[in-house]
Image (cartoon, rainbow, N blue to C red; front, side, top):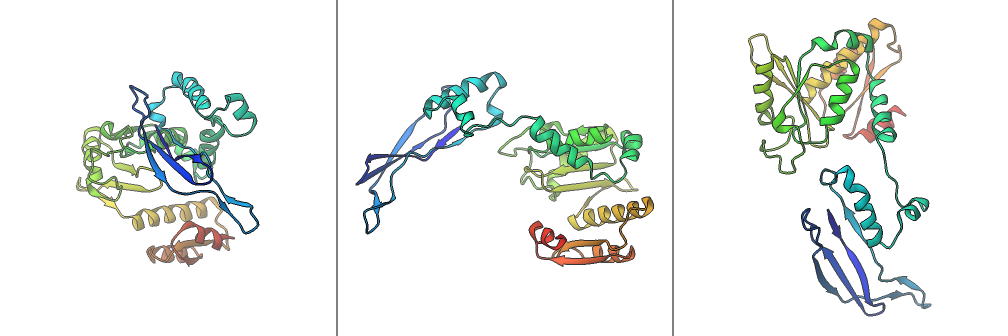
Length: 287
C-alpha cells in the first residue's frame, strides 16, 4: 500500500508543505513521512479572488494481492478514519464504490463469449484440445482460464512458475509474449503433457503470443501478423460456411499490419481498409 502526495497548509498565504508517505510495510503497517517544504502561497487574481490555494490531497495505491478478504473491513475502517469519512457516508456520497464480481467480471466474460464463431463446436470438441497457458506473472491467469473453461476448452495446463503475479517477472528477462525466452517453461510443460499449442499473455493481458508444435516435433512461435491472419481466415471462412458473412462486409487493419490480411479479405469478396495504428482509428473507420 502506498500513500502519496499529502499537501497541507502550514500558512494558507505563504507556506505550503508536502508530505510524501513511504511504503506501508505489511507487518508493521507503519507510515513514514518525509516533509518537503515548498515556498508557495495562495494565488489571487486582480480582484482579490482566490485562484489557487493549498489543499489536502491524497492518492492511495492498494495492492489487492496484499489484502485478504477478512482484512478488507479493517482496511476500510482505517482509511475512513484517516480521511475523516464514515464508510456509509462515503457510499451515500458516491465517493466509495465496491465493485464486485457480478458487476464486472461476469458481464465482461459474457460479452467475450458472444464473440465465439462456432460455440456448439467448441462445446463439443473443445475438451479434446490440449493447451498450455502462461500469464507470465500477469493479470490474465483468472479471466483467460475462466473463459477457456466456459467455452468448452477444459484441458488447459498452466505454467506454475508463472501462474501468480510477480512484479519482478522473475522467470523471464522480459515479460513479452513475442519473446522466445518467455516460452521456455511453457514449452517444457507442453512436452510433458503432450500439448500441441501454447498461449501466452503479457502482464496486462492485452497481447497474445502463440506457439504451435510442427509436424517434425519442433515448436514454432507465431508472429502477431501470423496470428492475426490465421484468425481472420478462420472467421471469414466460418462465417461464409454458416451463411452469416455480410455481402458488404469489410476488414479493417492498421498500416503496420501485413498486407496478407488484404489478400485474405479480397479472397472472400470483402474490402480491406487501412488506418493509423491504434484501435481508436479502427473504431472511427467502423463508424
